[in-house]
Length: 78
Image (cartoon, rainbow, N blue to C red):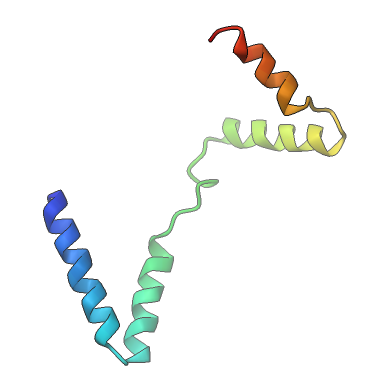
């Protein structure tokens, strides 16, 4: 499906959604959208998850640097 067809389909669906009064249909559509959503956490590798968990643990212990301090390290390359 090309971009124009996608946009046309979205507009058609919005029109249909705005016209319907069927709660059962809306519930089914909501369920489809809910099932299609992926959790970004589940898409990460175990290593990425472990790094985030370690970072959160460090932050909980107060082991972190202020944003300004970190950004100064990167400013020297600009």
